[in-house]
Image 1 (cartoon, rainbow, N blue to C red):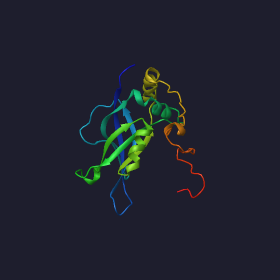
Image 2 (image 1 turned 180 degrees about the vertical axis):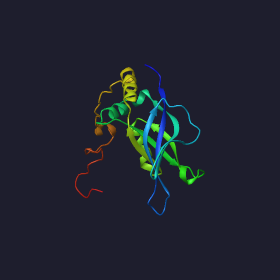
Image 3 (image 1 turned 45 degrees about the vertical axis):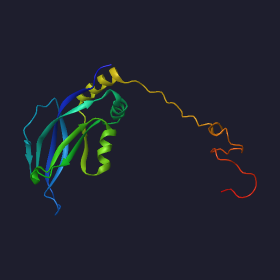
Image 4 (image 1 turned 30 degrees about the vertical axis):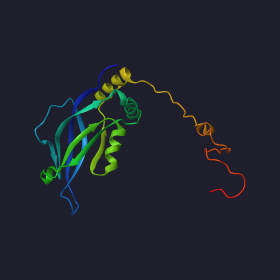
Length: 180
């Protein structure tokens, strides 16, 4: 078995002028750049009417041997995706308020960040190169775990010292009168 591996992934974020009276900008992860170099701050890539795309950061995407079922789940989807997690940085200027926190290919890990509601979690299309890299890792590390049905406990064996017969839950059955 090989070790856990990583690949640098450039995060491309599109910033739109917001129509909301409560916020000036809307941030949307739109792409990843496999093997991207590190960048200092947000580097403008392209600009349009009311929007700008930035290479916001380069973060490692890790593949862990224990998470291969999650990667298989992702690759089995019609369009495999890379998940980008953004978190608000209270010290950053408003036009760069959200900073890339994590890039992952595990839908289960992405779901954990969605639960809190504090982060922006967005899927972007997975490049073919990343799909091949993941498949090679899965081929070398995935071990199918057989399903093992859990057996019920033998309730009568739990309390063999009881002089009364036991019900299905292991509680004594009293003859006559109220049960309580």
